[in-house]
Length: 171
Image (cartoon, rainbow, N blue to C red):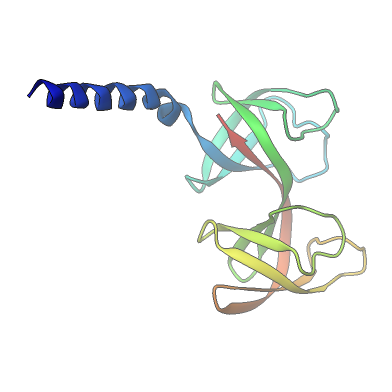
């Protein structure tokens, strides 16, 4: 009987030790409401549109602590709605007319053919392979390009409607 209570106490202590990491671990994917490329560091009071885990939430940027490179990048700290987050990744979000929002898993500017992209919405985490790219002539993926992607047994030919700045953060 005492051994059983002792085991139960150990399990409870272990669970309490993990509670802070569970309670404060908040991964988020957000995109800047302003068009990309306007400023190297978004000004305080910028609005961020949450893409995951709560699609369409809005976060207010209180401040951003740059890592010294003069641009919004990985290893910066951003304060949103009073909470501090570590910026893990910065890159583009592609809004496509086939009702997909995708981001590259390892962003490389230029030709995206053979890159893997991750679905942000509507089915977060679905992997897509970029099979073809029809450029509008400027050498970068942007509005008016066409992308052919395949994943999950499906193939889609999509028009790029818009490209936005996206960040992945942990807090």
